[in-house]
Image (spheres, rainbow, N blue to C red):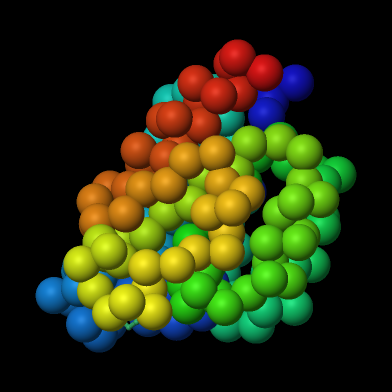
Length: 147
Ligand code: CA2
């Protein structure tokens, strides 16, 4: 059976490539999703991408992943630093979870240094630009082969 990775992007990441290219790069969200799909396909994985600006929608997709996906790659955007509810949803998901940040959050404001999601994530990538999504998919392929 083909394993599915759910790719979740949180608030404002729909603006990728449209504003602040000095922080987030020039690629659009559609470009990122296409890159991640290609990386997944190269490892025989399916990728199901979603983006929302709403916390409840992200939580609902994590619940859906419990039945329909084997792994989650998530950039929770600013919810990273605020959302115990997303942490709780991820704690109810059994497969591997990788957290991605396009920017190096540790080089930025101190409020970005803490991540609730990192309490659950099996790995964290930050500061690799949008290439971080591809690296996360590659790591996920390794984790899914092991499991
Ligand atoms: O570096 C990351 O990927 C972040 O998760 C991005 C979040 C930020 O709140 C986190 O601290 C770090 C913000 C996403 C905003 O995305 C935009 C993209 C283009 C233009 C404007 C915003």
